[in-house]
Length: 371
Image 1: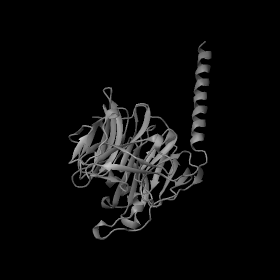
Image 2: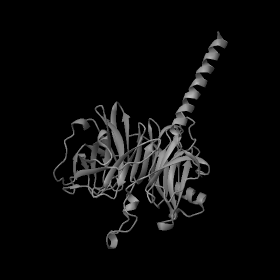
Image 3: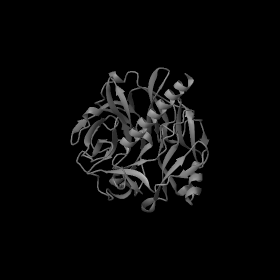
Image 4: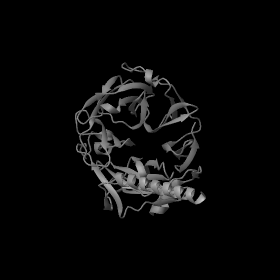
């Protein structure tokens, strides 16, 4: 009986491996092997089976990379890496003041952290993909001979400086402002070359083609007007009732919900502004999590700290359609002690991984208990 039970167990294990192998093959269908080219590396997001999506804002494209980093880690240990920017600078043969960390994503399978890095500043900056494992030592992710596929946006804004004086900017650098994966689709926020420039896209994966995006309009209470050209800064997916939504945050800081079902190529939709979280502020990163039987949003900001936002009454939230002096809508609390957070992502069921700026410009990468 023991041999029979062992045989059954081995057969089940082998069957599980076959299923997983088939899933991995499905997600890498259509990928080619080689070295993907990048002009820049910006927003990051993980999909299934260790597939990492890397946005290249300068090229207005997204590359899906089969990292092969798919060994499960069930018992990830919290860690703290001091001066991570200095360690990366040493790794890349540069100095800490020449290193920019543009985004961070945690592989939900291995719990390894991936960082989109620029070595240098301005037009001559060189992109690099960095991985940080449990030992805290950063390493360059080799892109030689990887499996990858690429999706190019069909309608990006022009790659040119616009505006005057100190208000000049290059809209191409906001062609992709955030990305996220859900149920076989990569959601992409950014700007397009349309009159309604603010755009959301739902791109099926594996990549085949990229249709035009959905133009989005919002009412911005702090500005007292409707806006169509302000890009989403960060978003997360969230289910309201039985329907999937994107919860998107903009500069100054409206929180807006968009039903995923309305994100169709060429459509123009109006989001529902459900909160104004404070002006003179830029949201940086946002996640959703559960604790004590309740669901919260956790949002990092450049001037208003890290907000813990309740979602308990989100299905009953009234639409904001009139000017707001500063704050209105969903209540939140600011997490004391969580200062200088530039990026955050879920680490495990009980922790978040945060990239924090401390005195002197040094950066710390550390896991923190979910508040």
